[in-house]
Image: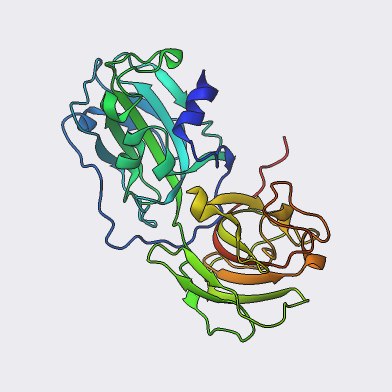
Length: 326
């Protein structure tokens, strides 16, 4: 039961990975909260240090009313979580009617739940976490409409009229696009124009197709450098040089992706190339000829023909180190 509900909570599926080592430096200036404190959320208390399983108390049954509310129990001084950003931390989700725990993370200091809050399967989570700061513990109360909906969740033991309570310890926040310093354009590369949300548009130039692997910084981040084996949160767009078709895009998919950087595999498991050595907050462009990419083999989804030269624009958002061996 707990596993299935956890997957609903973290629908972005960047779930249960090692604690974050760095963030994209997103400050979310001007972030507009989607919920405020109120009579329901102020009833929730949670004792214990941040990052440890809290003792949560509130009077049952608790009725969340008609709107999601959020109260800050511990105020953090870190980066602000954008309303469409990525959150990492530990949480406990409870049925507000019975006080029973629906699901919770391990609070073990090694693993945390990491997911884009805009794709969380429970709407009240996004409303409660938007604009919170890293290092905070927040208490969120959610009416059924912002929880499991009007049907509840029988598998989790949550009734159709049951409100939810979540206590979330925010250990890190990531934005959805690179925030590094813009770098001068280098000759010979496709041009890149960014939409207001950071989505790249790539224009392939005329002329001969490059035959060597080429990489250039579009933005230079001030975060830590990606090491071999790191799990890295990225946004990327990949274009086939020959026909200018989109081979893959996290922007189109609606959520960033977690990939493992590898110095022995230039394509890093054939998702994005040349991650090792890039710094968090950077955006870079890579032109990948067949010899450094898929070679004479087409991709299994048919989007990349054999012998294709590819162009990638990659935003390096954050690093989640590999979990310790058990």
